[in-house]
Amino acid sequence: MTTRRQALGAIVGAGLAAYATPAFRPAVAAPGPFSPLQRVGGGPVLFPQGSGFESAGVFNPTAVKTAKSTVLIYRAQDRAGTSRIGYAETFDGTTYVRRSTPVLKPEASYERQGGVEDPRIVQIDGTYYMTYTGYNSIENSAQLCMATSRDLIAWERQGVLLPAYRGTWNEVWTKSGAIVPKKINGRWWMYYMGTRGETDQMGLAVSDDLIHWVDATPGPILETRPRMFDSRVVEPGPAPIITDRGILLIYNGADNYLVYSTGWALFDKSDPTKLIERSETPIFAAFKPYERMGQVPNVVFVEGLIVDGDQLTLYYGAADTRIAAATTTLRYSQPK
Image 1 (cartoon, rainbow, N blue to C red):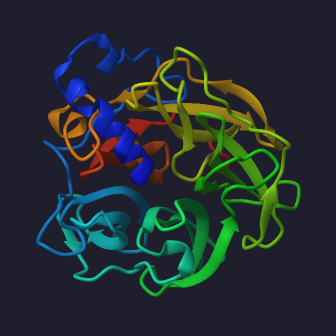
Image 2 (cartoon, rainbow, N blue to C red; image 1 turned 45 degrees about the vertical axis):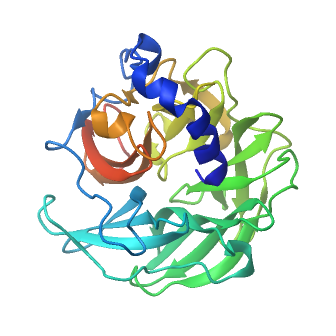
């Protein structure tokens, strides 16, 4: 989610905020792999603050469970619209302590005058792999990038993973890399978002070393669906969960009004290209005022996930302005 979506959101935002019909309070049916999601506490866990790098918005966090705490690595935006990556830590799930400076800021050419956005992290063999969007506003390019770290604070750039404006099927931008946290058939797999025509769809990339990636298929593996909650955008959320039934991926969908809600898809655990099932209705949708009003109205965007047995905590961006959390129970078993 970057400048392009904000611009589109502004076009429809005023009408959406005031137009309280069922289209903007989507019905939530049986959630399949999940029990009904419950919001944590009385509201967001992090708000914009101050006049610096997180003055306009803090949103779209990834979440990491360490030995002592839960760490949120999140997109922070200043009032000029530049995004950086912030860091907050909680020891009790209630109080969050932030670092006063970002852990990643735009410095590379592919991040020029735009920023670093929407991180997702997996830990593999003691190294944290963070996918993020590098946005260059001069060239109008958003590209899926990677940085690595051993401590979540000092990050080393690994460059652009999937360049914009080219690929086996992608025509415009690349974003939102959700890496499957274990090898399948001896290789690493990553679900990501690309653009075909007027819609943002989900593709799959493959790697031998987690650094160099190529498209695994000649086209998208999870497409948008007309007249549904994901008719305009299908975008990966946090890293998938490996279950006994398959690879379970939480994703973010948007309709033609750019109302964002949450769905899920299940892929074959021995063939990440093979879709088994996907949600017909959202499992989570913008309802609270802090989700319906903000920089981009009517948005819940899940990027962070903490798995504690069958208990899941999802961290999400609310209206591209704040960070909130929700909990659910996973109904599928996980391999021991």
